[in-house]
Image 1: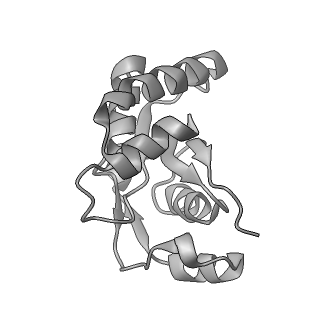
Image 2 (image 1 turned 60 degrees about the horizontal axis):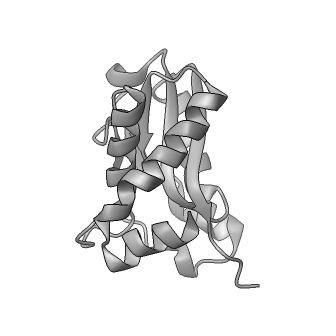
Length: 152
């Protein structure tokens, strides 16, 4: 999975999306959390020609027959790329107030929050907090394709 995601993210090889989505969908369907929407984490680098998390969430939604809403979570303040921020409290501080959620779409729903990479959990935690507090979702389930390697 890590190699396929690397090829998608850094080589723009969109041909790997279906294989990644098939594996992820198989896992989520066997887990069966009963989600009603798939919500991708907003991309951190907007200028990237291929947005892996958006492609993966869309393919996952198609495979699972669950609506995917890339417009539901928005970044409302600029946040620097967190890949070079190693201190967890600093990551949390940078993400405070960074996202908003379209409440009318997901209120009272179970949602699957999808990201391509997991490092510290700070982004997923920040968005999950907004989903519970602002959008009043019933449950948030998180799925990432792979975890980044530790540089420590």
